[in-house]
Length: 185
Image 1 (cartoon, one colour):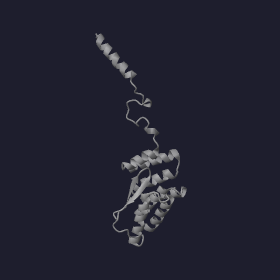
Image 2 (cartoon, rainbow, N blue to C red):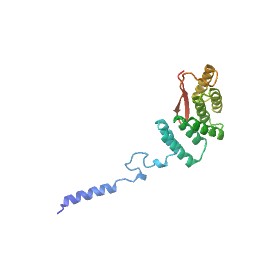
Image 3 (tube, rainbow, N blue to C red):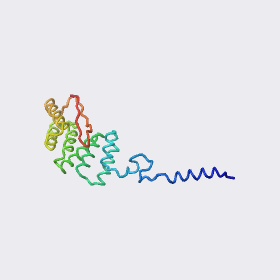
Image 4 (tube, one colour):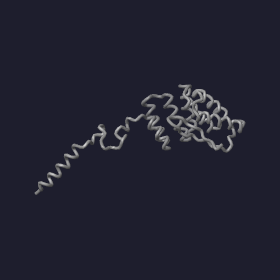
């Protein structure tokens, strides 16, 4: 036989569970952002993945953003940057060239294309691309200015596009889409 006190305890527990706010859409006890994760913009997710060093996941998120928003300068530039971080220089160059063709006034795409060209050892072309990035940005970005300076210094050191010396260049994310080329200079 069931005791009346036990029945009352079970009923109170059920009422407590039923009256609690477990609905995700009403801000229930689930972790922040989990309920709306599918609503996040693919670019935002991709940028977070890039910051975390998860370039494959970032590339997937950028492709999802392109499917949602269409191919625009933001998505093409992001896809190119993820490919660069994955070491896919040819793919990165293709996407970034499409981005600057689509919008020749978008400094991050020009800058990132310059990074690709530096990685490929095309110092003279990279210097010209950094000049275009600098001009499109009206000289407002310290990062682009530094990239241009480094590429010009490297151009003066090497004298041609075949020898970059022992310098290594890295793409580093800054802010909401700016990238800086770092060197061992």
